Image (cartoon, rainbow, N blue to C red; front, side, top):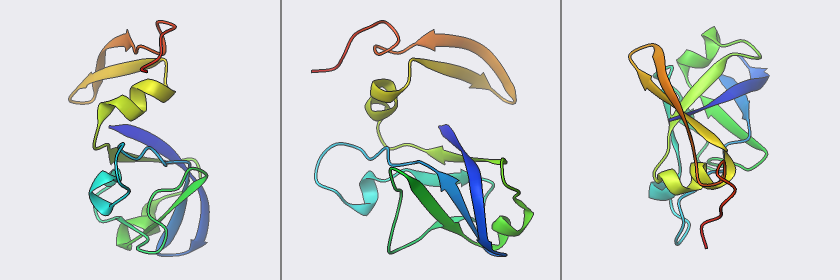
Length: 111
């Protein structure tokens, strides 16, 4: 999973998260997009999906979110995260149990 901060609240049932365009490689399709996971009850905008700059999210759960709160997403392939971030936090329950470097964090690239 990865987390994005809420950056805007366009209306009571919509929030916009900063970033989010970590699509799995291959032909662009809905099954290649990350999906909102927590808080439950958020859905991607069908006209925009996950965007490199912003990701609009709709649903009743948006009512409880404030600017700066985190929305957690499930990615479809880990490679996209490992290419963009230098470390991953390994989580068990609500605790970070370890932090490990990605290949980017080791100064490598996947090519």
